[in-house]
Image (cartoon, rainbow, N blue to C red; front, side, top):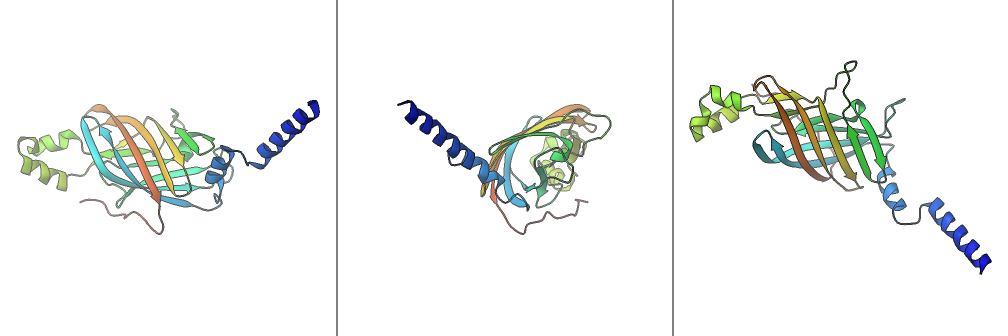
Length: 208
């Protein structure tokens, strides 16, 4: 019986080493093919200040790390179809501390004054609508939303959590920063999910 137990333990160790057991295969699902960029089209819903939103979109790029980078991957998220699309955000994991376990990736912005982070989110400051008188009428509000330039808020803190598979991704994100238009701190929190995409690029033009 002792010999059987020893063989059983040895067999289990070999299975673990080869990545055959459940849990190890999920790690390979993420790691497979990371020598090239994977692209996902995201749907985003969440809240900024007192505004709930749905229907925002973004592109997520999962890439191998830059040479010498401490993180195991590089994750870049940018608004779609325009980079400054309302309620979208920009994220670059180079400016965060990343942890990765199996298919889960977590990135957290760390406070630093040496290397400012370009990570940001975009929303419509209520103050922009007040100046147009838009809050007093629905038509005025719609006009202001069409013509006003959404506010870009630099994130001073935030965290991105992702569960990544070959063909789909899901997760959550939150960021906070100071709105110089509204003169207040604003928090952006959202859920995101998406599927693998190909040959998509955000447009560059900005709203006039």
